[in-house]
Length: 233
Ligand code: FPP
Image (tube, rainbow, N blue to C red; front, side):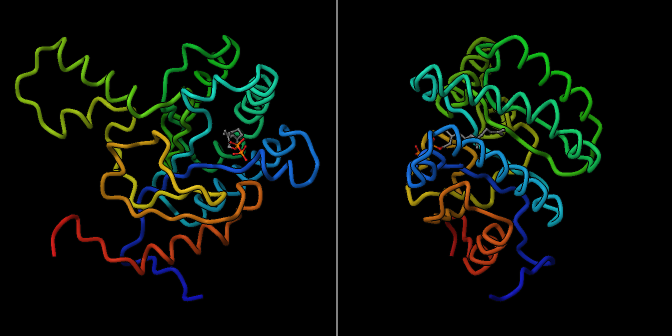
């Protein structure tokens, strides 16, 4: 494997659709929650790897607006994992200057989760390391509608791409250069539709719990082989 070129064409923003936790567990005859639990270990490893690689922005799709359709029991165990991650695991990331941002509408989440997240947002707001975006109750169409409503309310005449971008949860951040999806599924599933207009897509058959730092590096190396033309020649 050729090494990563850190000087040229290095991705500033990597977005990941973390898929396959359930199938990972099923293959091992385990309940789905075991897959999610292992999935959180992967989240931690990938945040560490992104920090080491000095990636500017990492966006992780943790809970979509469609995920509310899952059984209450599964949702509740995802919430428990999220709470532990935010309360305990984030301490290490804070020491490494990781800054948290939430993409999505948190108001539907239990009060204690909202409280702990607000706490970490406040604690990490001046950090200047990796910008970690966690998408929670996130849907791209919803995000765009929210932006369009503001534009309409403010009666903004001069519509522009940057006026829309500035109203998205990712305001001020570079668009993802690379979008990764694990588990062999080849869809973008309502994730960052506006922001990934020119992103390179990378699909791997690995289930999210099996994805590791080396897989992230392999995706970056593949990305660096691609020629991005942004519609030009
Ligand atoms: C997809 O696997 C994964 C999710 C819907 C949730 C992702 C959540 C985590 C990795 C844990 C919580 C996150 C954080 C940031 C602490 P799936 O269940 O859809 O897998 P399947 O398609 O095989 O059923």
